Image (cartoon, rainbow, N blue to C red; front, side, top):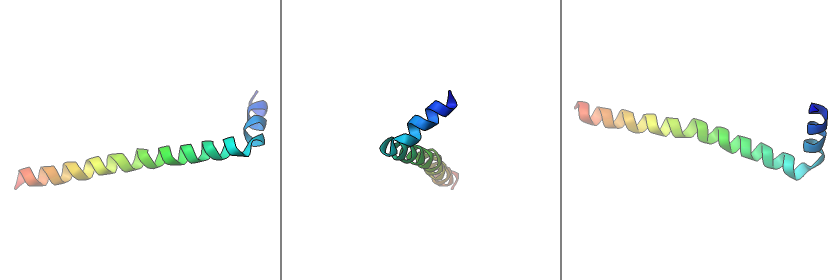
Length: 50
């Protein structure tokens, strides 16, 4: 079953590139958004702490 799935995915280059771009964009968002949140929380905490 996995052989058939890989053959279908690798046979269509547009679909393969779309999946790679989607996964890359998702991983970018999953690392960027918590970093922005933590930066905002650090600045807010330092403003309240002073």
